[in-house]
Image (tube, rainbow, N blue to C red; front, side, top):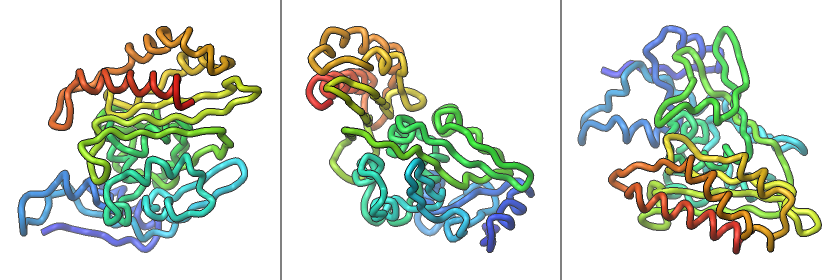
Length: 280
């Protein structure tokens, strides 16, 4: 028998979390697959299930002039349908999974699953998203890159809930997203590439690049970004070897059922080169 709770408020959910041995379930698109045990057999989730997708405190999308606040239980489909959501936020979401999964999967679940292949993560890393974490005793903000510590690992404690994702709302001249998978839709990423840029007088004023599925966590090189800042498009080729060297040190892919280490390494550097020389 599986013990389950359906709290009426975030406060009640946090009180339940204090008891320990609980598992949060919002959309369940990752959790149910990871714990499936065969046809007709109830998944063993490792603890009492706490349903949280319905909680109003975890809902809502608030797009202000300087920030975007997203409830952790907002679905990917909901984010895509939000008219005020910047297109650079929507870009990875539109290529994630299938329509049915996007209708149930949540942004908070994708973060807390903490897979290197999580499709929202390169975008969130590049945009320097911050997470609001809450327990019955405290709340705090943490950068997404500090929250995720390794494959499937993060800082969320057994008495805490991810409540909200906050993204600075900035104007960028361009964005670029590329997902490499076995097919165009409903496939786990072999690797992914996300970038945003801002230019002035034909020179790079700001550039942020993040790659997923090429290391234990999402890869971003602030040193490479600083090197490229201030350059005109025609000057990028001169520093490209140095830029690639920064990423060479960070890209540490693995062999798995979806792809090989060599393929991921080669394609990641190829996407970087292609973006800087032809897409920026």
